Length: 572
Image 1 (cartoon, rainbow, N blue to C red):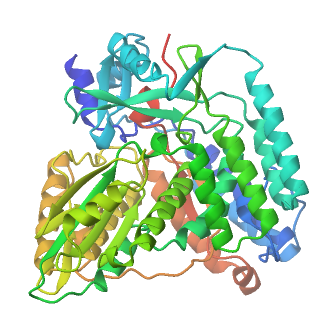
Image 2: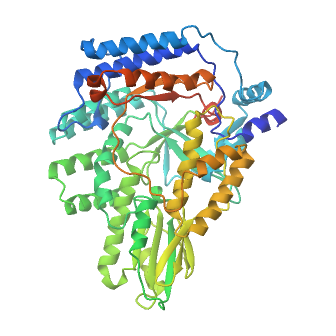
Image 3: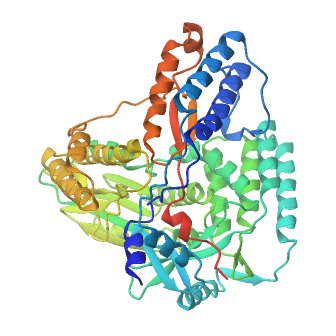
């Protein structure tokens, strides 16, 4: 590896190379046309979308142009256009200033063209990994040779069209059962646009010995994905009501606040990990758990029939390709499809309910699960640790659990949970494997993105640390790592000063702003646009400002190193 390539890769996969920029005037004219269209659309359709409108199932028509709006709307738009011309019409394209040396840019493009090197992000966010093609192909074929999970089928160019026709027939059957018209329209539109069979690839597990690959299936363009997404959206409210399912870290923190036991009690903090959750779930058992959950939650019979029909279709058409060969996944839930997480949650919650219902005295002080990660607290006087462990391990023949227990502390999600007399406290958990691959300050990201990711991380620390001392320690370590990455100490001090321990960011739904979108290239003229927009909006008539919220400037950014080098398809 050359020094230039090593230096370029050391900047991280999220590093964005400065893109070639149009003149400021060209960029702002394009942005203005899109902004004017959004203003006219809101004026045409109104702010109220009406009862029953679900934006998730809206089929956009990007080529449709609304007509001119009323005079009190068009006049401010003409003023904005004139102000943009006055501010930027005389600007010419500035000399390109690259944020990386030319040799590094060439090294990345040379690596991209090499067919003997496969570039993938490592598992556990351990950075970019360069692998020899022979090793990568051997590892992929090793996994695909598991005949219990994958079955090779004859390659046929008509396969996508055949599955697409079956998917449309499934949607028609769902419509007869009561599928809403706008949802049917959305499904038909996106199924019609899909064509590519999902591609199989692996992410190297560098933390394993020997190194193996984590199987991934890129199914975003497959014709079952719209149906899978519809199922995921429909099942999300049901999953949120399941008592053993953790939504996120904030949900875990809320549950920890209610955990109490006597100060002299012998308490055990335990975690369990489900091995290969998705491929371990039998499809028929998952459908049985789904049907039981739908009946228990009193879901309408016709809606339940729609859900089960769509779920069965998605799980029965798990096709994938690798190296011009086609396979069908015949065991477990489809990988890479939106339906898999909620269905896995429903299946595991069904098993957990049966386990605890069979022996009421088996329930621990607290039990929660985030997908395949389980956390529970038990008082040993009430439940011997091996009894509960055995019951959980025997929930289902195909579900295998790996346990870890401690009377002092344990890790769950991004927390270290530890005992303090009669209750539990927590602090931030950072894995020993963590490489802290933060965005480089030289990356072509807008300044507010740099401030935002740092501030968001500090807010997470403030929320996840019960004690102020833990918060200060993790902030000091975070600041030191950012300085090593190249961030200026003054910039960091200003950002860190905005968050104190115990900070609770404001919550609530924000109004959808109007967006003025332009490409970001890092030039000095970028900072001038928000001022022009702000000055224009403040001068607009009250009738305009009452109806339209204050616009925000939004930037489209170039490809990062991941987007430049990583491909799902094996290069030829």
